[in-house]
Image: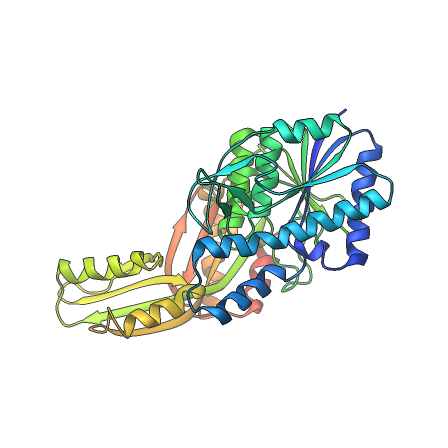
Length: 393
């Protein structure tokens, strides 16, 4: 008898019809004599709606209270599924994060799982229950509810799988695996059968909306076998494991959620630079790809996430008002595949194609499994399609 973890995302739980599909999928696994643990996200757009409602009450809602609020979405999902499974004749029980023994750091909204006391989960499995756990949440040393950040239900699922020494962790969503690029942008995107942990981690960090990056880190650390698949069909998905294959591009990610910032000041001095850094970091804005454009004046460029632009603009009107500034929405293209660092032909073809499209490069980054190119403008999906056609075989 195997212990397996099944995680279902919000799109799989959006309404009662889809909830019945999820229930039947769980029952199929349970009837094969598996010990089944289920981790759920909030239904549909519940979390987004809760955030919107909170911001109607306060421009900057208290983080502790936001964790209390947002954790309710997953609790609704688990209780509904347990009600349905019991009506269908299957023993099941829903557990919140704290009931499941998930203990986290004290940070609100981006908490990290520190350990899991599996006693309650193990007890319920021994009673032949399907154990349904609220993802995305836990409890800290102060007995306060905490949340793990967006996508945190993936992290819950893999962490539970590691703690329970589960044989398999399935991550189900509305797509049936990881693709060579975004299938919503490029019609001939190909499903990838297998990825290494390093490759999947690079894809997650570059914005591919498949798995939460922290869940991949945990899977790699504890060697948890992950398979991503669709809730709505039985197609073979993508396995994430520790296997490493030949040098090739497996997937290409285009991230448009980036702004290129340029700040200028009449004189260069360390105090001004320190003031800039402190202002950004104190407001949870992390600048990347920092380039000094001048040797005798303050003229620097860096990138930030689109989601941080509002906070940055507020700083320009207050703490950073001494700077003249400009900002542009740009794209980053990332090629992911083990051994890219040693394949000069891949890099050559990429640069040649960008040159043909008259796309100007801002910076590049080369790692073992990834070649990333930051561009000076936002590019169309046509360039992505050309790269995919040239590099994905």
